[in-house]
Length: 84
Image 1 (cartoon, rainbow, N blue to C red):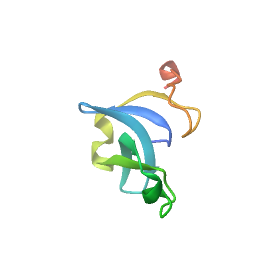
Image 2 (cartoon, one colour; image 1 turned 90 degrees about the horizontal axis):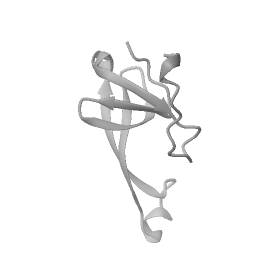
Image 3 (cartoon, rainbow, N blue to C red; image 1 turned 60 degrees about the vertical axis):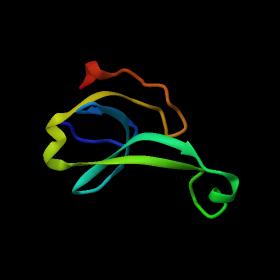
Image 4 (cartoon, rainbow, N blue to C red; image 1 turned 90 degrees about the vertical axis):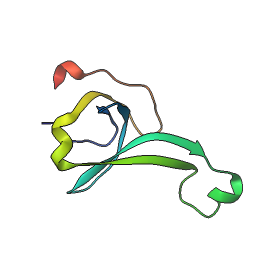
């Protein structure tokens, strides 16, 4: 069964994205981001709107690991799927 790690690239059902946050009950899958306007982000710690999906622990067996990225500042997938 998949164990989530932040910055992993995964597929859940027909959705693909980056593991963004992990709790004891679920992880969030970042599906998309959209830049905020300057007026919006001066009141926020983020500079983008994040579209997130909660994937609860009882669905982890339906998650496919695709790779990882170096950090939140990179979007290139490092393919190390042969190591899992």
